[in-house]
Length: 533
Image (cartoon, rainbow, N blue to C red; front, side, top):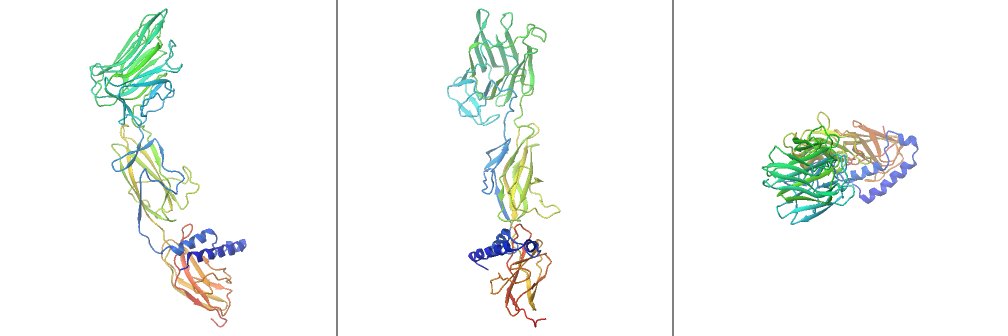
């Protein structure tokens, strides 16, 4: 075979000859020229013919692909620590409110803060974020009586003193350690102007006999100036060590005030003059110099605490949304064009009704790929990708997975590892039994066709020196000459010079883009003559 420096020189000569051809010559079925040809020839110079051993590319959520313009893209999914490495799971996150919250504590940061930016938050005592969150990256961890949060409104639009509010929702998740009677989850205290005097105001959430009780003292204002008290006591027991959702909402159009636990109505009253649906509605009116204490006497976890000036119809109770989420891998390079993708396997967990739906796409080039072009092809990990057809082929492969939770929305599938079994498409074997028969200004070349399934045609080399196959003068064109057809078994070179010895070799090329050109046959030689038959 030729050296790589020699090849570079010869390739430049091929391109120069090709550029000098007219359009009729370029369209001739015997010629395939251009950079793709040169690249293919270079592959032929270094690639071994025949079948290639199967290879496996193992990837996970931490895998980075240098050939990809983007790495992993997660939508509703996240990377978490798994048993053997990073796992891809659904992201646990509460749905966003249509109305921006007045107060929102996600507890996802190292220090608690109001994500709405409207309340100041101070930590009293030792505080540590817990990773055992209901949603997001963390939950607030509290231990009575040492730890609590104190919050005060700092924006004029949030709990503005003596300014009536309309619809209102307060909600949070708790996971008590013991749920002892007398534990206080939250306490709001302020003083509200009532005519010419001031009256104390309080909102409380306490645990009594394993039930949650909300109390409102002078928070709902009677237009006649009378002091007001409303209480909502749950019927379900709060279970230690278990997350539960608690929501109180007020409808300013009817005065409805109700408490829901885990989406079930626990208690109902009306903030009206009759404490029924009829009567004058008492709207909430925050007092001045107010302060909210969170977990002033509570041991356990609190997450997703929010106050919204809206009547929330459907609170987000599922840990994972029914719509699920997706993850799209980088574009992986399998190393050679026309590589056969033999199978894709995955290590994944799908608890209960949880599921992962898989799709892939492949091609010899990834330039111009968009989100849905080329089309994604569904598959089942471990199953035959080809079915009744040939195995899919391509140098570049990308994966997409859709993750769906179980029926209750409490458990997520997890994808730990993906294994791509592939086989590089190597250059074809050389044709056998190459022969040359001289004639008058011609040489008839024949060979036995290669029986491999992906043969596209043959390359005929000729030249004036042994091993130097860049001859000119044949009517069919300068060397090399591409002959299409897997079953083609010969080519006659015309217009040669009688008496000149020509050295000839034949190689096969496949249907890859650019094609893989195999090793050449044994060298043969022939001398045209007028005396030849």
